[in-house]
Image (cartoon, rainbow, N blue to C red; front, side, top):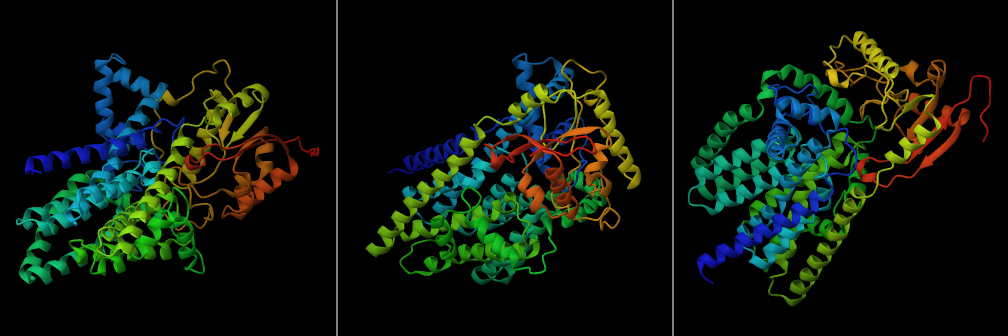
Length: 577
């Protein structure tokens, strides 16, 4: 085939892989409600010139990326007459923010879909033929955790893509006659990685060390020193630009990192519990690696060292494996049992890549047993990936239980005071919002916190027909459940309050007239949540109140949980079983 024909085939392969990957990730973009970790409001504020986020847990680059998407949405809406000017755009956000969330999720899906062509490109630069490289690209397209997380507009998916792009750039750098240019590109990809999430440095640090050792070995110390200089200089220029909001208020970022440390690191006496939790995560469909990828990833260095495996840049691929394993094991030991699904997306994407490369390389081995065995394993792994990737698609498109719960509340409890863990679309009574705001002001005064300004559109000025008296249950951010309200070891920020003892006494709310409690995931809240206060609260509720209704979750991946509605009797009466 001519060079032009080869380029055409390569271009078509990349486009097909990206399209398949994007469609898989885009199908679930509107799954019926908003995710608590999606900071679309921060992205919208970027369009007004507010570059420093109010919640500074992560670098702000994802907000800037989403802001670009929202700017595109504004232009599209103007052309299609969805709104008229900035005021109409703002009004749409407060009336129904769904288009804003879906836009950001589609942008996240596109970012995540880049995994597929990156896997393909890495396979090609590792010396694999186009058909085997295409199979490796399919591994990236069907990466189940990537498919699922692409439906949530936060920085984890971009972190994984940027990390894989960094690996791709290192491979190209060793293939090119102009390594200086590619050192700059490696640096830019690495800066992107840590600008989406600072935890990327845990993988990049050992990767950088191995990268420079390989340059020193193959090109000499002077070339290595030049590479270090180029990368550090590029990073020093690019990082402040991409993280301007962090630079403008670095002190706030550091304060939020103290909260992040409390939220992320458990107090497990036995730190090896983190390794047990990691193994459980690895074996979980969607959230981990299927058995084929897991075994192939663990054995990848042995496969790469076999003489019959015809892959280029084997030392660099082994360096990547070492960096991933060190970062994964180290993180598991550090955080203990607190391992949310998004923690591992970059690590598992890298391990899936190495598994695919190892099997694809073995599938070209001269030994028939290795060749046929690896080909069969690669095919089985792809089938399992496709099956697991279908799970988030089914859940995303299943009806949410929120509408059923709202209907039940409006029908049976509209005249009562309600406390709920489930977000509701029902209109809120003025008095209920005033009670919530008074609580925030009380806690802000207690912890000397300045509350962010509320938009006028968020304020309830009158009780519309069908309005219900409900407030949110005083749950806390994930990881802060066990903090003592009088002994917190971080500077409290708005809405990052520790649990308040008085608020986790059932009588405190009964005395204020609350009689209906909407609870998510009762067994966990009663038996497992790491807070004696909270466990006692829900055990007391179950003992003293009537379980009036239950709803089974259909979207557990998307944080939908079984819902229980309790109706509590007046003091002095006993609940009937």
